[in-house]
Length: 238
Image (cartoon, rainbow, N blue to C red; front, side):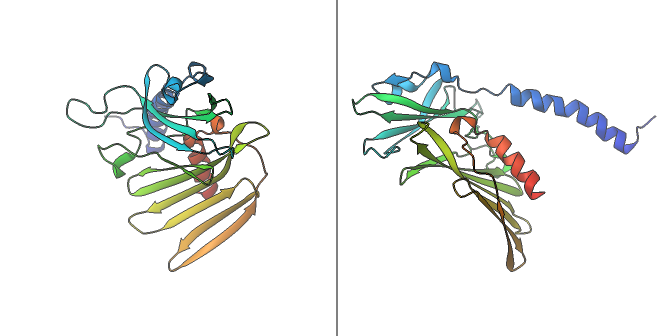
């Protein structure tokens, strides 16, 4: 029986597996922003067909003291299969501001920011993985994690930009924890100051590295959590 050389086998295997993975990522259901109304009188008016509200937050997001809304949406399909295990449902985030006339207006739609309900990996098993959101001092914070032996935690911070009337990314935190060795590598990026701090645990001490990055506006619609994590992994050589 003929066998291929080990490196060649890896190449063949990769050629069979990687295209399938790429297709799966491209086929991921994302919300159609054009189906989200520009205005409405109730938060429910901003939920397009095929989606439902998983969580709704209220708070002042643009500093005008009027209550605004953040809607965490999830695909409108059964949460569990016939065996009672959580099904995979995609998520989306819709930001709705209240104007001085009392009307609600669409201010942001993020289709690739929140992880899906089964994207938590072995760390969450068959239960739904979280995509935690909160409003703190006018800042919208998104926190989520996933993994198995290595657990990845990410935190995104967005703030309303009056000039563009959009929500801009002001901070991104990435943390990789090895649950077996206890090793931790973290990165914190401040897009307002243009600084990035990396902390690597070395036994009982931490090694800190600070770098300067270009200041730029990144709007919530542009944030793809998969891409942000992949870039962080490459930068940190994980």
